[in-house]
Length: 433
Image (cartoon, rainbow, N blue to C red; front, side, top):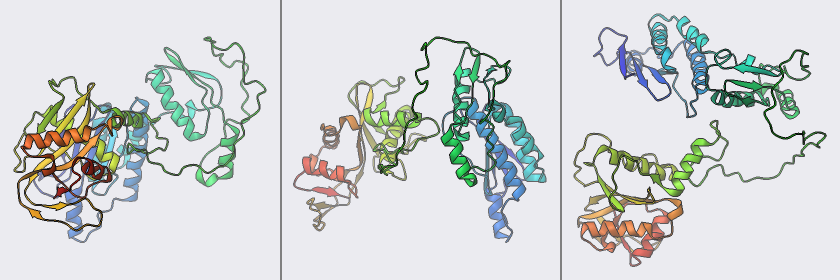
């Protein structure tokens, strides 16, 4: 599937023309209604650009069921989209792209929301049936169609939202489940009913019928080692409130089970894996805005590490378009070890500087208009920090520029880690720009 645009108004060149963009991703397609220019035109005329309540409710209903269906298929990443008024996004499985286009078109042009509700009905999953009390076997191809392991993972997430303990097991062609309600979850929902509207206890008091299916034994412990065990006691104590990991990710339990954080943290700690399609003949590569796109994409990926770690608004490397020269010679130094990029320095040339003796309260020193390489950002993988990697990058930059390491300029503001590096390699002061 390729990207395409469907125009809803006769004059597609009109800035206020509405259009539907279809953008395929790996696991799903995003069908997005672009009303931005149309909203601007309505606002200029003094009309309200807000969507009718029935419109937003229908879109939200379709989005919610579509999210469930995409995760049911196995997608673990983040899902988000807008519901207007400038943009209306609807991520859907590939098989439902045409239905989504027709549903959004009918809702926008004719205020007919039946297509959105019909789409939501087609995508709706029988989650309430899957989580009904009782031991049973759900068969692939009959009760569900995703791979059993994927389906069981999805069902565990839904059971957790309901406060239910699933007690499930995936087999080659089915999933066995026995949903039960822990006492603590029942107590929480009865104590705070306003936080769980519509919740009904279907599990307490359930009695298995005599003809209930028997889950085959597949090996394991020969006895129940929790039989007559005393329940675990809980206490309230003060815990650390910091919810941010040093790598830049949150420490709160994510919906994907922590897979995204684990992958990012590993990359932050040991470096970015060098792609197999790149031939790396030395330890350090200098990537420019005219380098092949594979190298520039790798540089962008490495630039994401300090961006997330330090909370920067933008990536320090953004040159992903056609190869082109820049007047200030933007470039990046990538240092690799053991098949990973462990060091990164972004730089450009600049003429305006003044000298700083690195004292916190000191005034700016002499000004200078010599063309110097300016350090925009330095990042080192966590496992290689305090081992001279940053100094190696700065020395390489100075050598390539034909100057001393003390002649290199630093962009402001200089971070605490940057100050420690600057004081170590240039104790007499640095040029800043």
